[in-house]
Picture 1: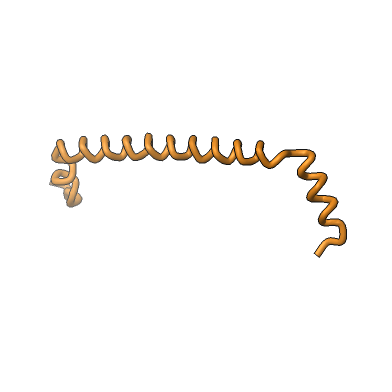
Picture 2: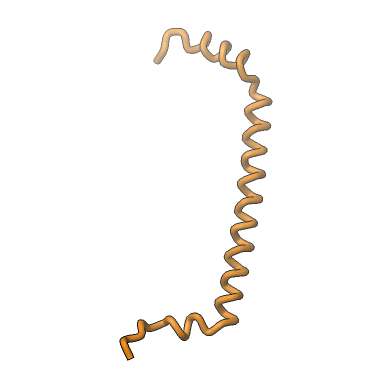
Length: 66
């Protein structure tokens, strides 16, 4: 591998502490989880609306020119 890898790691650790990286990863995971919950809610709402209407029965088959 690299000859000076240890010195690079110590420089990197001084530049960005691990605690900041962990905090940013935790915040990103939290925001992703919230976004997925919102998306799931939207999908549930859309499914309920489609079940309530006759959308699936009306558009199940392509209508020809009548």
